[in-house]
Structure formats: C-alpha cells, structure tokens
Image 1 (tube, rainbow over the protein chains, first blue to last red):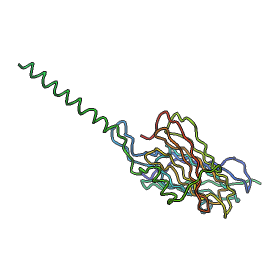
Image 2: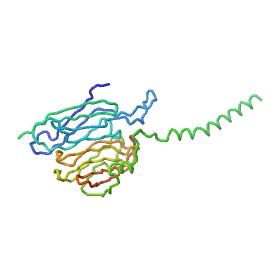
Image 3: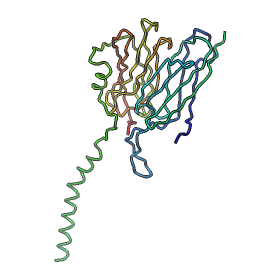
Image 4: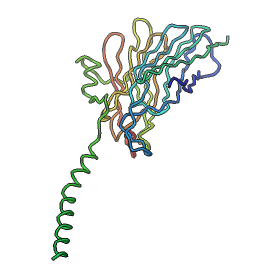
Length: 112
Length: 156
C-alpha cells in the first residue's frame, strides 16, 4: 500500500520578503486510526494507523522535527513558523506506523 | 406438568440472563486502551526526566472553551522567545491529561523557526485539560494549561 497520499503545503502570507517570519502549514489526508474504533460494516477493530514522524526541512536542512501520536485528528494539520533566509525549497517528509514513507515539497520564493 | 417444567426453565434462563448481562455490558463498556497508552504523569516524567516545571505567562495556549466535537479540537501554542542560538524554544509538547495516550505531539524547534509557534488539531476523549509543556534551550521547563469542555468524545 505505497500509494502516495494527498498532501499540501501552504505558506502564509502569500507575499513575503527575505527576513520575514512566515507560517508553514502542512495538511495531509490520513485516517489517523487510534486502534480503538470498530469498522461498522465488519464489526472488527480497525488497527492503529497514524503518522508518527514528520520532518520539515529547508534545502535539506531540517528546521523542525515532530513526533506525533494517534491522538492527533484525522487528516492532520500542522503549522510552524519559518524565518525566510532566502530562496529555497521546503520539504516535508513523513512516515507512519505502518511503514509508509512520503514527502512533499514546495518552493520558497521571497519577493523583494 | 409439562407446562410447569417449561415455566421453570424459562424462569431459570431469564434469571441467568439477568445475572450475566450486566457484567457482560460492563466488560464491553470498559474502555480498551491502545498500544501507546500512557498516563499524563508518566508522560511528563518521561519528557522532563523529573525536573521541575513552572507555570509561565510566556506560553500562551489557544484552545476553544467548549468543543462540540472531540474528534477535532484546534490547539495553538505561542511561546515568547527571541529564538536566537543562545535562547530559543527547544521543544513544544502538547499533552491531554485524560486521554488514554496523553501525548499528542512533540515538536522540536530550532532558531530557524523565528518564532516559538505550533498549531494542530487533536482528538479528546472527554472534558479535560490541555497542557503545553515547553522546553527552553537552557534546559528549563515551562508550561501552560487550559481546560476544554467536550460534548461528544472523539477517541473511540
């Protein structure tokens, strides 16, 4: 099940300069099953399935690492700040407890 | 005679059922705990290693007072800090005191972040406190807590 998950990186505000502090929002479509809920159709307990590690990096240099548990909501959203040092590429790598590995990247283009 | 026997068995069966069902229901109602279950005190101890934690105004925690749906509770943590190499926020831990796994997210920050800020959405099983435990670069721990009323739990 190595299908790529739908994910999105948003940088807020849209227009920013070098030296500004911007919000980097990361959203991913993921069930985040706790391992406690039952499947209504089959009556069996759904196994726990959640994202456990996330790394935000800029040009390969990690600036935020996260450890996350199943207590985070379905389709999780994470937001951190970044002080823009110049042009670059933001990459978010994430793994889940079932061994899925994915990544998403977005270019960072400051103006002025 | 036949009728009497029949009635007797019916009575016995219903009595047995009456005795067994409550206990069975209880067993079902007892909440199962996930593989990562960890109480709040144990989680704090694991993070701080027994160090003292002080309440501080530097940490501002933004959560809704009443959450209608426990499955999606937005949490925002802001920490006042210059975020320089010498003095920055090292980590933000988001904890929920009464969830079976009280840990929600451990966020390791660096001076590159520019601000001690983190936001996410978490699940809450019931009315409880949310705690933001912040580790500064000098090794001290500060926290802030706020209670959230949950109308419908979202953990199971």
